Image (cartoon, rainbow, N blue to C red; front, side, top):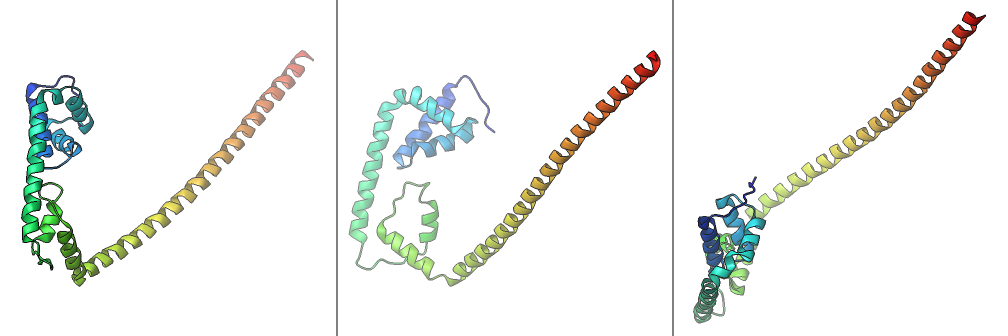
Length: 195
């Protein structure tokens, strides 16, 4: 759990700025930067976002612009290189799975050919499909069992609630009878005493 701090140190501001600028340069989002830095400085992503937008951003306008330019330049270079090396039939890439897993955290870009290769390779992996289907079946059975258990608990809760209300009503009636008996006894005692 993140702690609430009141004052930001210069070091925290510097780390926040460095992280955000690096994410911009890599083509990532500021939200991802806030999530990353929040763990390092023990603050919430929302606090990092607020601090960045309210205070720190103003001091790093030039760095932000340079990061955006660097990102555009890298993207342009990648697209130029990709256009030169693309053939009619895409080649299979043995590392496509690893690249697909890390695509969100790196400055690498993926094109439509990479997507097609990745999907074709997934389609040609029957053992992984079988394992996924088995896991899916197992999870479906587990879900049904939990659903059944939840229904049983809800039904039991309703019965207990009804029983509780019935006992409360019986208790009220009993208290009325006791009160009535006490009142009757007192009246009879008074009659005997005064007669």
